[in-house]
Amino acid sequence: MKKIVIASDIHGSAYWCEKLLSFFENAGAEKLVLLGDLLYHGPRNPLPLGYDTLSVTKQLNAYKEKIVAVRGNCDSEVDQMVLEFPCLADYALLPWGERTLFLTHGHLTLPTLEKNVAVVQGHTHLAGVTTGEQGGQVFNDGSVALPKSGKPHSCILLEDDLLSWIDLETGAVFFTQKL
Image 1: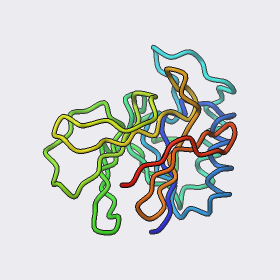
Image 2: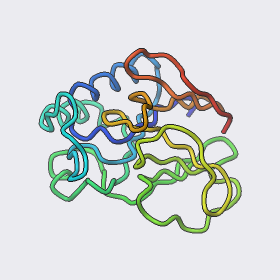
Image 3: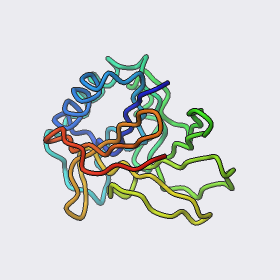
């Protein structure tokens, strides 16, 4: 793979899901990686703009062949009953060149990871790069529907070894980082 889009925290917003899928199409990415919290808004979050879980289900199912997904803290067995792609694994490993991407929502404790593994997560709704408990960088895509701390509605475009954080409202890159 040379280009993927990474996103999380759609939280049932048909409006923002449509923006994400439009970006995915226009980017020409091979895979859409979803890091959890797809349908339900959760008890601590407000209803996102365009909250319509049935519409989000239909939108995502149309891309089922291109989606790699992991479970978020708001996802459940009921979600798997309506989504036509696996979405309940706690993590996934994705080979990427000489590295491996450890894909997780971010709400569970990470296992001990090799040095050539990059952690990519959502959960906090804060786009950016932090240092993990084990050292090493943790890449957070932010949130498609409910960003926090003034961050934009966002996803990551990973092309070769460059991560670009995308503002889904404008389509502009607002941050880049080497993998």
